[in-house]
Length: 189
Image 1 (cartoon, one colour):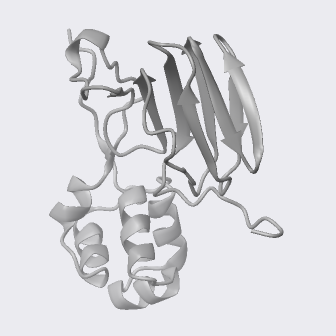
Image 2: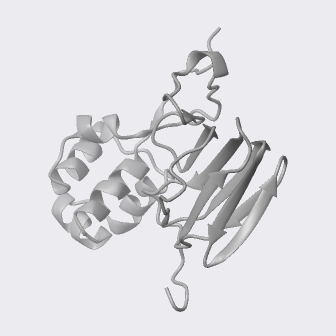
């Protein structure tokens, strides 16, 4: 019995990503494909599953192929285990991805220190959790000291940098994936 059961794919997110990459509206895709806007909206939101013929029409409208859309589709499974002993770590500082594939969430575990001078700014929100050790985080001009078990939540667009203040510090960073448009327009940003 494996950790990851193969199931059907959700093609809606792949269709939406491709449409947005081409800067097309649902109305334009509907016109090009001969399918209705409500149906395309349901496909993008995984409320309707297109037939092979419909998927080919959508792919043609998006200047791609049905095979490419299926290859970019998200798995419909709800469980995927990433084993600690089965992942390759990048040498110092060690970074381990905690989520495989193209999902709406990204999570990584950092062990040790890294380039403390490097500034980060992500489009979407993220949470930093100190699993072991301690860190100092500078965000929007303020410094925060976090110890084991502490978390820091950063909304999308916040510039920040961090550094481990104790050897063998482990920090888990969980964020909304960059390909998702979860950020809100915020005043002054």
